[in-house]
Length: 286
Image 1 (tube, helix red, strand yellow):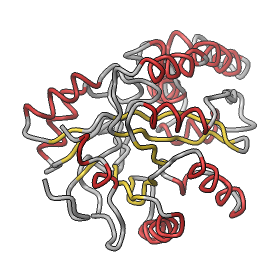
Image 2: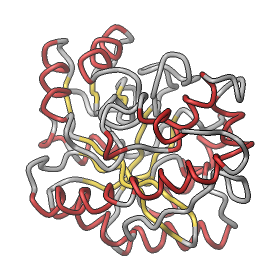
Image 3: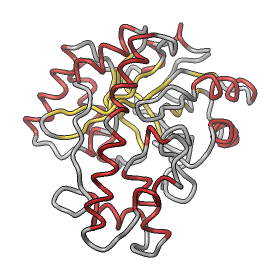
């Protein structure tokens, strides 16, 4: 398999196993139809869809890397760390993800209580209707419920009005630590990647601290080309990758045909002069 920057690799997307709306099988079919050559399913804090995703990828002639997206708390913000190419049967990884998921149920009930105070009743039961895996109930499921009852016109409006800091449905969550997330991935034979770095509301100093600490813990990659980055941000994080000696990843962060503005496999290719993360994972590609 050619390990070059112009490979159509999509190493970040979500299925019904977390907060996507499509099955792993349907995602694989969509990715293959869009020309994806190397694929990874990266459900939030969950690896339950990995065998299905790998089998579906192979059925469509795609190469596959195991994946997950772990939520961590860093400098008071939620940061996402993508793990790629790990052993999906690793017991420490499984246990760590299970503990990370464990906080979601209580948080969801608190979100519903906050929404009830502003007149939106039964939001917990409403959100559950959109959840493939009740352990992974998230703000996205509440957002879909609020759109469907007409409280907002789209999920972006829900987040702005109800689910961000200072709004009635906002409840912070303590996730895994950066060190633990990187360790679980690395100890299971994979590579840790900082997901969509432009999305975090960090100062330049905080961002520098994130990259420095991530690298010190053994993190080896950063998403340069991803669905939420602008063209200018591709350039910025290509520079960051070079500055910190990190490999570059590429992924759409696709969740749903109705919600995601970037489809599977439809991103620009990685900029040149970067080490694609799949070069470091050549022996983990199946």
